[in-house]
Amino acid sequence: MLLELLCILVFGSIIFVWGVRYSNIKDEFKHFNLPNWLRDLVGIFKFAFAIMLLNDNHKIVFIGAIGIAILMFAALFTHIRLKSPFHRMLPSCSLLCACLIIIYLSTGLITDTA
Image (tube, rainbow, N blue to C red):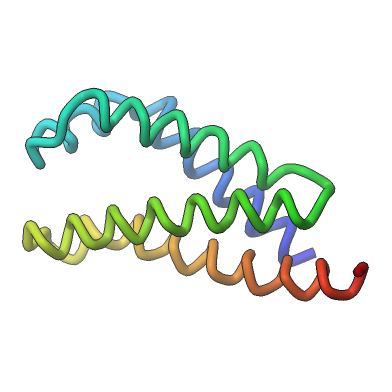
């Protein structure tokens, strides 16, 4: 139950931020002087990994969570490197923590079914 809720939460967050609030993403990448191609590539990966979170196969959920966790770690590292205020780091930190919990929970389910 917790695994499904976290997967839906992470999926919804990514869809909301990268879909509904895409103009904010564009502004943030511009503010950090990151290229448009990188923004587009990150977006493609985030959508792909987020869709994986909704799969019934726990191995695919695991891969999706690992992918988002890596992207969130990179986002958090970028915020730290550029000395962003904590409130700007909070979303990437929260999604990273949620993905780490998903990874932990899905790993247990993978080993239980093996």
